[in-house]
Every structure is written in C-alpha cells, then in structure tokens.
Length: 341
Image (cartoon, rainbow, N blue to C red; front, side, top):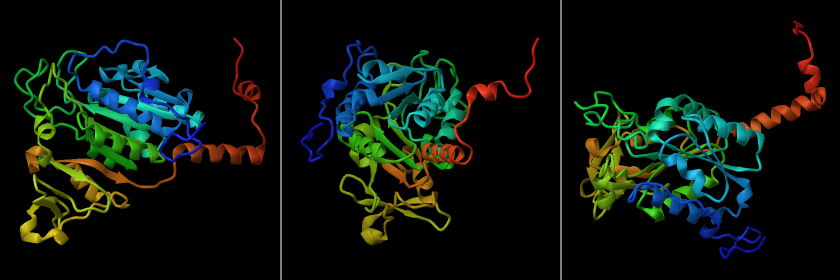
C-alpha cells in the first residue's frame, strides 16, 4: 500500500492499464461500449482496492461482455439474473466491491423482477445499465426502452409499447442512488461513477450508449449539444441552455416546468436536492425528456442514506448466533421431516 498521488495515503497504487485484461475487445467498431469501458478502467484505480477484491457480474447482451475485459474477478451470468447473482455475492462476501453491468433489454425485460428487488432491498451493489434503446446482440429488435413508433426488425410497423423509463422505475422501487450519464462524456461519467462508488447500498447508473449498427444516432441531440443537457448537481440551480438561460420549476401539481431565467430570476429556479427523503422531485426530473421538454437531465437524481441489506442480514445472523449459538448444518439436514425410501 502507498500514497496514490491524490493524498489518499494507504490506498493501493494502480493504473488504468492494470485493469485491462489480455482479452481482445469484441464489440462493433464505433460502439459506445468502448468509451464506457475506458472510463471504468480509468476510474477503477481511484477505489484503491486490490483487483482481486473487485467483481463484475453481467447478464446477457453486448454490454455483458464487460467482465472479460476487466482485469478483476468477474462472471458472465444468466440473462437478466445478474442482480440476483451479485446480491448473493455481495451479502456473502462484504469485503468485495461488486459491480453489475447490464443493458436495457437484459435489465428491463427478463431481468426486471431481479432489478427492482435488488433496488428495494438496497443491496451493496453498483449497477451500470447501458441503455441504447434496442436489442443489439440479437440483431436489432425493439427493447423495453425503445420509443413508441420505433421501427425495428420485430416491429416493422412501429412499436406500440410505451417504453420504460429506467430512472423512474428505479425511483419507484425506492432506489437510494439513481443517476444518468452519457458514453461520450468521460469527465461527467467518471464523476457519476465516483459518487456511485462512494454510496452505501444499491447505486443505479443509466448510461446512454450509442448502438451505431442497429440504433445509430438515438442520442445525437444530447451528445452533440450540451445546451440540451440539464446537469444536475446537489445544491445548485437546475439551469440549462447554451448560456444557462433556462431553468426548471415545479408546478403545484408537482410536474417539472421550463421557465426563462430572465422572467423568474435565478432565485426562482429549483435548487436540486439529491439528498431529499421524498422522491417526488427526483421522479418528476426522471420524466423529463427531449420529446416532452427539449432537454435531458444527467447527473445524480437521488442519493440518500438507508440501511444496507448486507449489513442488516449480517446483524441478524450475529444476533442469532449470540442467542442460540452457532448452527449445525448436518444436524439441520438430518432433522425431522426426512424419509428413507
């Protein structure tokens, strides 16, 4: 252990190179996953954690190749079940830093049930949800986050399903940390990862990720125009625009509304409170889209403290041992209600 150069004496000194595996990265040229991988590998040394104490668990999909490319422990698991597998790992091994990598199809469709229960329990996991609004690995079918009218191989006349909003879903499940970033904004993505890693409990980070083969350009308006991004920072006014000329206020009904700063003044704009116990402001922010408001919120919508599932479970086990003594698994398996055939 040594000083890592950031004044964090005692942290392990590693570099981004230390987190690059010897596996050939096999995504389509130009895929947004490359940028996310580079950002994560570049951020990991900040944790100051030995690589053998970090685990990446994925499900199925393009994003789920991630564990192969990280020089840490990892598991390429079952479609949609990464949160469940990671929950078991986190609760049984509290010494590990457990990360889940999933996609909008993997997490929001077959994995939706596992995702919401990990969120509501507040298991100590960091979940990176790559959202490209399409099924990429299976060659371009519409996904649970595809917009209404999306023409794809499985919806040649346009999707008639209303999409999930991952951040709204997470907030509805009482997630304690909810954030969004973009694949190409490495500085912002790294800062969001930094805050997610510092959070105790489940942290969900939605990352807009361009699939340049099957859904190219889905986020071009946001990627190419910073004025169409609403950067959310705790304790700062929710303003946006090329010159910060617009802001967010909330109506009496709780809906987010865009106003001109010249008309209401900076003091009249909503000041973001990521630590608020009540979820309604964060939820209203999660419903803001380019289609509805002409802007997209990015940053941390919610970051609150709540008991962590892993710690609560460990506490119950300790209390049980203190009261009854250590259990005997063989005796339990050989106890009543057994039969010989």
